[in-house]
Length: 618
Image 1 (cartoon, helix red, strand yellow):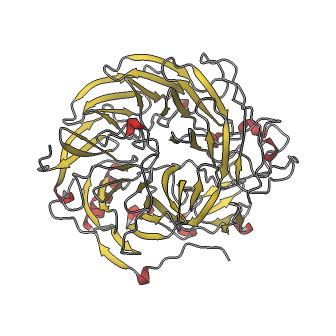
Image 2: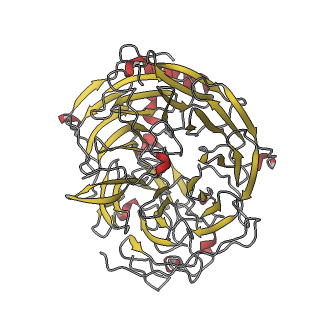
Image 3: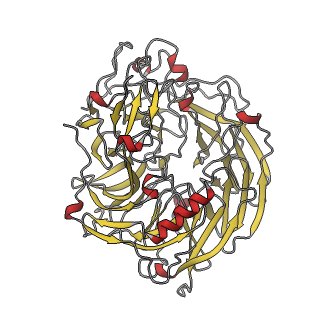
């Protein structure tokens, strides 16, 4: 029998969401036979020589040179009405699966880089290099959250097609992108614009790539952003002046650079999108932070003769093998390892007959050295994926006790609906438990490979499988709260009918869809509490993530514009505000002048919140 997601609501306490008083309710073993699928552990340690760097001027692309040593480890009006209905129905509720909070025994913050240890700033897409999206700020907390009010709103002009940015803040200045062509600096306490940069790009008409991205990276006085025409751009953080740009894609087609870059020492890392096109061989690029020269490139689809190529057939299919790298990775400065997730394989998402094998390094997390791009280990979540369940979800780094011993862990809630815990030193698989409804695997075996249910594979007649194409979660940011030991993720219980000739997402025929914020105990993968989205919002695909703080709060959003705060330990909803615009971004927080702020980007602009009367602090 499949190990399915089971609900224990009959034994749970359900609390209706009512606005808190004072809240604003309006607004591997490798086999050499390439013809046979790779069978073995999904995780693999590697010892590799550096990748060949390629020229920053767009010269010949260098292939990864790896030497693997196998281990022996085993509608505006409609949306407005929907938002109003959401509020009138009090459409979120906390479901307490376990009322007692848990504690992450043995946690420490040593994994953070020194530049991220100031609680007042938010200097990377996920705040710091860990991906935890945890802030030690606590001026805004569970006791006074009802006094949270809007402090300022910065409107985007023109309004971008999508706004997926998480703004950065350093010393009272906010930096944000609006689409793939505009960037702004904002006084973080007033919302007043300080400068604006417009990227002079003229797209090729209807074939113009998507005009959105998820924000900046910052190092010293330099900002870095990906552009709509697949360049890495550097600006002067003080003035917005253009410094340099370097081409990301060279001999391959451009599908836009949507991810926020990651700065690791003197390297700026950025990935690419387009894995579903059937025309992309995925890669991760590293550029020199001062000059913009490309330092190295790691291909996430190995070429003929390279380690991992035996997991692809002996054809040219690898040239469109996908495995795109379009979400921001994380970094451990003690181990000096970058962790980067990868997308689904191609060239066909739902028909893998022409790409027999596990299709490394798709649907994986890879651990690389920042100096030279050397592969140290990999773990593949979904071998030979045929459901478009990429692994472009944040790999969250946590130092905590595991089975009574301190350990360096990597946590990920994957699109395939399983929650994973890995040893991030070696890539060893430690735990895999479902956090959302799934019917494609009986379980994850002790060697980290899923035990498949054959009936869930796409077929010409159509196969019913859970989750649907959007996954048990997606790219939107999770968060981890060290004091509670809880991992927060926007999860989705949904099923689809998968065809080899395409896919169908008919939720009515496939059993409907339900959406939640779920709190997972990292130690065993168990569900501690959940907040269900009700009504229309249960069906809407949310791409809005989470953020958690030392004030005992977790913040999240709904797609139609509701920004919500809940108790991080119990899931009780404490506050909400409707921004009046679609939210496809993840929240952040910062402090300046003795006041803490919380901010979220909606389609129309950025909202910043603070306490109505903040307490006096030295």
